[in-house]
Length: 396
Image (cartoon, rainbow, N blue to C red; front, side, top):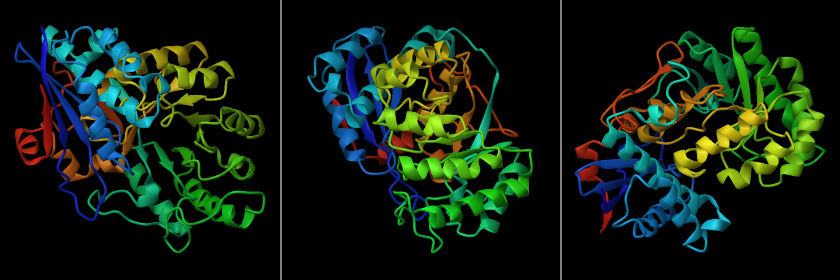
């Protein structure tokens, strides 16, 4: 089997006000045996999708004529024969990730087995799932809300609980009292008044849901070490399950300082790439819940190694999922096959109808649990309509 072409697809965004900058980039690797594999560049949100598109296109030129079953050889070529690959970084790692996922999709289809079988088989049949980013509301998937009052945060948590989720993730500091996101300066030692806004929101959530719900506190690295420690100590009494990205992940020493001073398990990893990036966090026992993103950390080939490394250090794993339906399906295959799985992330973006309609299959949780796709490969593809309507370039 040989790779004959690669389509890089800038998936048309049918969403309007709900997600103004939502832009998944998908690769489709085509072979001379008529089998195609799909993977996603993990930069669907924020700034950078166009760079991810270009990187995927540049890397695709290295694949033509190669055997898609040789995923390790191709991964090594992308890293070592590109000069910039060994330096890592979001864009090049995301391009590599999309290609790697597509190669495993081809393997599964060629062998007529789901990808999880290639990773050692199912360790579990269902994946516990949490409702993610409820600071933007929950319940009405088509409507993005901006929550400001403690009562609104409590109501969103109650909606998630009513939908069958017994865990949520929320950033109570991202939005200020006027409804502006990322507008406050949360750095420094004079932040108690600002941080109390988040504390009261979190307190209201805990009072509303009682002990029937686990809470992950998201910080998006908007706090520095001093304020992250202060806020972490504030919320210890609210029985928080994990404290995610309290500080910038590139300085593992600062994250270690937070862990040393706060009695809450630390979660991080969505902006850490490859096993080399994760190594110091494992060796110094900093992260309790690792969150590699399949679309940026290096794909299946690398994420499986990262999760196995974490297992050595008693670290549980939750794949970071904030992409399109292809990324969701791929994440389910890996999470069901690893022994140290913790919980699956259901970002509110995954509920948006326009996002779901870009692909053939509509996978959603039932009563807070995901079932695993049993189709060959990752069990997900773009629809022909989506491919036809989206801008794309083909590398031959």
